[in-house]
Image (cartoon, rainbow, N blue to C red; front, side, top):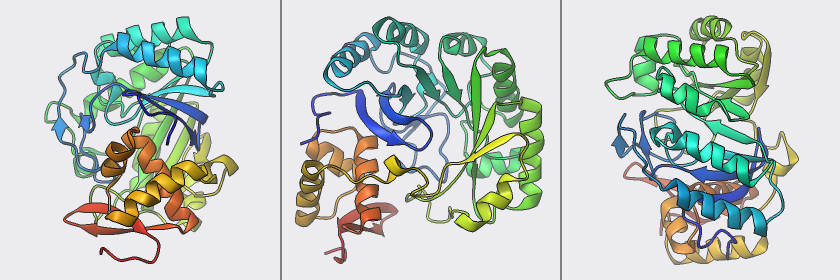
Length: 319
């Protein structure tokens, strides 16, 4: 059984293409977000909101982190990410400061950037070591198509917020750009995004596309052989982070106990990643990463029914 059993808000460490061994921290309930992105690997947003409150107790999170850090090898990063938009938690600044009292491990914040126009959020993130916001479109029309933001978030406000934060943050900002085939993954649209990247001025661009099952079946990834060509259209350093197997640790298999536990569930019935998380007492994001590794290893497969992705043992249909 996974060693994360008993932890509600802390998961991993899990291998990350960009952050090495990343110890994840979830600050909002599953799919509480300012966006409802068509490509989201966690499915459709169930609570689209801009309301900021302490969705998750920071004191409880810090207690879990202290236990986890004492029990495990030191991770490369503590990452505030997980099941929704972490800046919706109004205590994120207090959490970052609290983490700093527990460990010297750097703190990364993975945010969609939608609320960085708020000065209080920019201030709250200042103690972080790395911030990775997103920019998935070059104009308002495709912003609304791809990200499906809350009605109170405008494209202009979002871009201005990301720019203001990047220019004031004393350490590095990496800007994630997620491209969709036939939508934003065409040269004319990439040029619009690249112009905004020049304006924002991040330390690097993290270029991504769909390779896990997305929220919508019309969201398609860019073929791997086209990503390097698209990368050349952006200024500065560009990391392509979506290709499987680029980094050895990211292709690692789950340990035998985790694999056996998951396959035992799948032998009994098809499961979504939420089903596996609930059945094994692990975090949904960790369950998804483990399932995708099993799929990549050829020991599990997927099928889609009712707009949801189900995992089954390799070679077996819906059953």
